[in-house]
Image 1 (cartoon, rainbow, N blue to C red):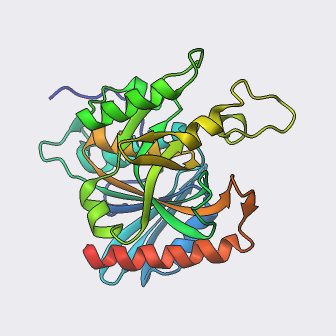
Image 2: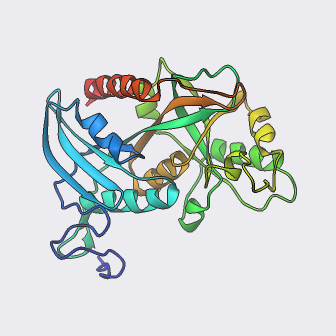
Amino acid sequence: MNRIAETELILNADGSLYHLNLLPGDAANTIITVGDPERVAQVSQYFDSIELKKSKREFVTHTGNIGGKRVTVISTGIGTDNIDIVLNELDALVNIDLQNHIPKEQLQSLNIIRIGTSGAIQADVPIDSLLVSTAAIGLDTLMHYYQHDMAEHEEQLLTVFKEALPANYGFSPYVALADKWLINQLANNLQQGITITAPGFYAPQGREIRARSATPELMKIIRDFRSDGQRITNLEMETAGIYGMASVLGHKAISFNVILANRVTQTFSKQPEKVMDSFIKQVLEQLIAIL
């Protein structure tokens, strides 16, 4: 196997990964990702024990046990640029011999579970509810930098979505899917939908403060979109990157969206922390049951 150059996979002086500051064995095979570094402790407070706490920049990691199962929670920060870092370095922890800088012969598959906030774009998706992304359409560019094969139904969804966009639209979206096994195990009784992953919070999600949007019709196009009985239900900023990177690296991923806002009804949760806490407990209970 070819050795990976030290400038391609950078390590710290102690042998830990450059951004995450993690060593092999620091992370479990089941990893919960959250955006906000402060939310890591909100998740790990429900662990029976915590064996490791590490942090660097916006990347905070806690690993512990819950219900006899080893689980890691890590913060990604906001956006798919950070997802590129987190997913590559988590993969390197289990699939690269970091001492010799070569891929391992036996590759491991991680379970990656996102718990994040989101805004609904359909009037009938209530605030303070939980929604699972069966697929995500990325309006960012991350997956255009990777070889990313798509199944026929993914290509069909992407084609229909591109056709709905204005002719002068200046980007090329991509599509990535949740892992079917995780969906079947964790999301059978939950509302599901297609998620838009945007590269920003304001104009990329149809908001205007002072700067004017170049595509003011984007939210209506997204809200009205239909393909084979499916619709787009919500907006956030990481899921398509997680699904895409998990796919190319051979991991399983699912995204739980805590709906705190509804852009159609223009309502926002009155108790966002309480709602998030409730769904964290729900996801953890479901998760340990299948591990």
